[in-house]
Structure formats: structure tokens, C-alpha cells
Image 1 (cartoon, one colour):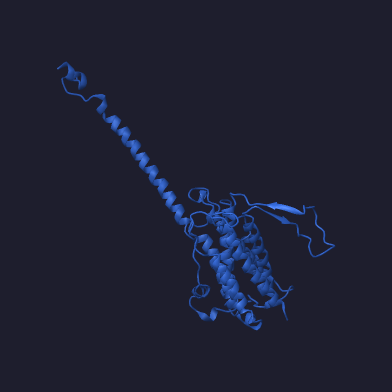
Image 2 (spheres, rainbow, N blue to C red):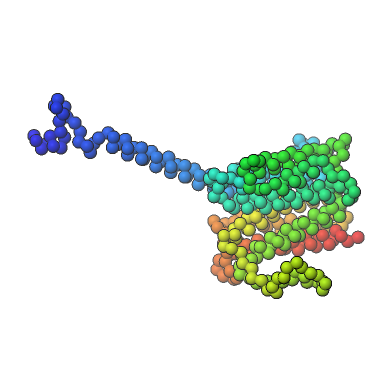
Amino acid sequence: MSFFRTIIGTSKTGAVKVASLYKPSNWREKGKLWATGVILFTIVMAILFLGIYWSRTPGSFNVSEIALEQANGDETKLVPGYVTTSSVVELANTILNKPGGYLTNDILPPGLYLDNIPNWEFGVLVNIRDMTQVLRNDYSRSQTQSVEDKDLIIADPQFHYDNDQWILPSTESEYKKGLEALISYRDRLADPSSRAQFYARADNLTDYLGYVEKRLGSLAQRLAASVADSRLNIDLAGESTAQQSTPTPERTAVKTSWFQIDDNFFEARGYTWALLHIFKATAIDFEGVLKKKNAVVSLNQIIEELESTQDAIWSPIILNGTGFGFVANHSLVMASYISRANAAVIDLRRLLQQG
């Protein structure tokens, strides 16, 4: 009997009491730990899957359908410039309202640790900035002495606001102001009583292609630098009297940091995605100019090259193989498509400049 009292024990009143091994407080503590673990695991998995969902880049859209949708189905509103402006509006809507919204300035997970989509957003943003500037300085003006459009005066600087500010004011709030100004300009284009204009002329399109040449050339060089390389200095080539402010060596070693390879790739993918839609809209708004210059096929060639930059990525990571090795180099593949598109842009620009 004394043995069972040692294991189980009795109270002074003779009631049986459970040994410390079976105390309810121990079970409660263990239950709290399990509950905390389950909650933390659920939060981590939710953030992980949400991050995967937010990391999907948006698909392409039909510029004609988007323009007609923004015109509320009224085809009479599809005046020159309406499709191009509607496409820029849709690009801005996409980076602001896609799944997860605008991620570049996020300070909480999962947006905090995502970097591919923010770089993709920046590529699209660069194209929006170029387009709003061209709309303001070229497409909406008949000559250098003409007055700037009142809405584009607002839209242009708004999209040049810092792309990573989360407060006071946030990037999204500033870009939304620019978007509202673009929408106002688009609507005024379709209003016969408005003074808003879009001049679909060869010289205006040539000016925009000048922007594109430089952007594509820079992207191709940065992507090609994913492998070890050295480049000759050709900054002053072609002019014997040319000068530069600071001296540079005749040969420079160029190599992209391992941490920047995927950043450059997705920035290029975002820029070419946006440019693809701009050129599709250009084919519609500048149809008469392109036909007169027999340049429709040249623009279609550019569009085909840009469509190749949006092919599906079957690898879970951006690979950086070298030379003709076993592993692919995604940056060099992208650089190849961009270089071919850039060569076609240069040819189109020269064609438009011909009398």
C-alpha cells in the first residue's frame, strides 16, 4: 500500500491525487507550444505561397481591345493617339493594380524579400516615363513653339517620382496622380471640342525611336556583361576632335555581379514587355505613316523580336552559364533578342528619316 501511495499519493482527506507527471498545467503548456508552432507554420507557408503568386509577371493584353474598352465600346473615340495613350494607361494600371499591387516600396513580407518583380516593375516604369515625356514634348505638339498639353505637364513629372518611397508621399499616390492626368488627356483626345492633340507624324515617331535605341542598347550591354568580358573604349570613335571630361583606359574589364544578374534580366523583361505593347499600338496609330514609308513590315519584325523576349522561363532560377558550356545563359539569350530588336529599330528609324 505504501508503494502505491508513493506513485499516486493521497491527500489528507484520503482523496487520490495524480502524480506530477499528469499535472494539467504541463499539458496546457505543451498545448500552447503546439498551437504557437502551428500558427507560425501557417503564417510562413501563407507568406511563401503569396510570394510565389505575386512573383508571376502579368500576361500580354490586346491593345485594340483595351482601347475600345476604355472608350466604352464607342469606336468613334478611337482617334489617332487614343490606342497609344490607352496602352500607356494600361501599363500604369498594371504595375499599380496587379496581384500584390506595386511591390518595389514594400517594407513587409512577402514583398520585402521579392526582387524579381520590383525589377520588372522598374523596366515597365522606364517605358512609361519615356512615353509620357515623348507625349508631352513630341506627339502632342505640332512644332517646337507650340504650347504643352496641360495634362501631360502633370503626368510627365509624376512618373519621375522616386520609385521606392512608401510614405510621405508614397510612390503609388504620386503615380496615381500621373495616371489620372494621362486618362484626362486620353479622354480629351476623343472630345472634338477639346484642344488636345496627337500628331502621328514620321518625325515624331523617329524621335521616340531614338529613346528606344538607347534603352535597348544599354540593356543588351548590361545583359552581355553576365559573362567575363573586356571592351575596347570606343567612346570617341568617328570624330578626331571629340573630347571627354575624364580619361578612361583603352580596355575595360566588364563583369556583372552575381547578385545583379537576375535583376538585370527581369528589368529587361519588364521593359521589353511594355515596349511590345507600345509598338503594337504604334502600328495602329501610325498606320498611314508606316504604309507611306513602306515600313509596316519593319515594325512587325521588331514586334516579333520583342515577343521572343517574353517566352516562358522553364528554369526556376536565372542561369548564368559561360561560353558554349552545358548550362544555359538566360542573360545572353535575352541580350540576343534585344540586340536584334534594336537593329530593327535602327533600320526603321533610318527608313522614316528618308524623304
